[in-house]
Structure formats: structure tokens, C-alpha cells
Length: 286
Image (cartoon, rainbow, N blue to C red; front, side, top):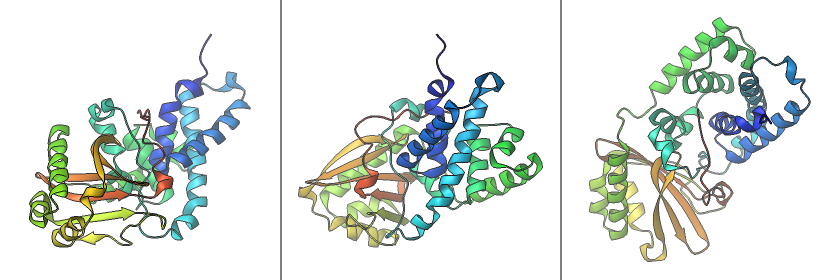
């Protein structure tokens, strides 16, 4: 018996929706809506089920992005993508790991809905321009222009230097060691002078309400935490080494951008609504 194409491509469809929305919960809702529509389609009329489903997910995600705009405006403090526990093999696919990283998803938030959809479909999943055009309701020529603008926008905001997984792991290990000493100087040695810390507590958990800029401020803030009260565990989040922090009933994840052997960005998520997918790895694929 032939498996249903929706089931076959579910991991791909989830990845598309998650890349567009930055939220696993919203991505699952989009998949549910897509499944309901798919169940009522005459399958014999569909030439390429994979392309059809990706386009359907894209349209549903675009609708969801527009409905979420007001919720994002009312969000308390900084908004970060929902971190996902991923299999180590996601990191082996360098392009996939880069595109689902917290850093990339945060940059994607600066694009408009259609720009984001075009970038994700064309640059991440390498869909032909005509299929992208059908998904977003534009002409192929218009999609090419949107893709060009989106590439330029993303390139200007991406980390300038790519690092290997082993180097990333080593720097995170050093960061954790410095964090546990509680000494400002140890933290300064592992962070770039212009490091930025962005925290997302969602108005529920304690977190800085605005980005914290500069190594001195970030190090001083981190050194003031009660080190004896929390445990840190190295995990693979969104295809990259990161840490999971537990302290009583409180929990957080911390992801990093590494350049030239130092931490340049710190993304700390403590909003409990975004920490529900940390026990079982999520399947992501291109």
C-alpha cells in the first residue's frame, strides 16, 4: 500500500512552516489546516504531490503570519523563535543547520511575509521560481526581484564567519565553564567586545526587556546569576550546540553565534510556552 504523500513529506512540510513562522506550535497548526484541505482534494488531478503540499503549507503559513502580526506587536519584551531539540545529524547538513538556527530565524523575522516565504522556498528548499510564484501569488519575474532583495537583506545581517561544529562546541564549553566561575573576567575572555544578549521571557519568566549590548554589561549581568541554583546541559538546538539551563521550576535555553573563537550573540529563551519541545528531537529536513 502506497503511503499518503502528506505522511511521506510531513517532516519537510513542518520544516517549511517552522522556517516561515519561527514557532513549532504555529507550524503544527498550519500542518493540521493543510491536512484538512489535502483530505478533500482529488488526488488523481495532482501531478506533483510534494510541490502541491509545499505550496499549500506556504499559503497557510502566510495566512497565519498575517494573523500573528498583532500578537507579536503586543508581545512583552523581545520575541525569539521557539527552540527545537534536534538530532545530531541535522548539524551534519551544514546548509539546513544554518537555515534553521536561532540566529537565522531571528534574522528572518526582519523580512515581510512574502519576502520570507520567497527566501525560504527558493534559497532554503531550492524550489523553481514558477512554483514559488504559484505559492505566493506573484509572477515568476516578481518573485525573482523579491528573492534578490531578500538575499541582500539576509546577507547584510548574517554572521560574517562560519564555524565548524567542533569549534562551536568548544566555545560553548568554554562559555559554560566561565559562567560557572562567576568571574566577570572569565566571561569577558570568551565574548566579543560587541556581544549582544537577547532574552525572551514572554512577560512570564524573568528576562531583560531589551537587548543588552557590550561585553562589560553582559558579563556583569551573567556573573550576578546564582550559579549554585542551576544546572547546565549541552544539547543540540536547531542544529547547533547550545545549553539547557534548569533551576527548580524555571528553565531556559541559550543559543549562540560564534565568530573568531568568541561569542558574538546570545539568545536566551525562558518563556515556558516556548520550551515544550525539548525532550524529544524534532525531525527537520530539506
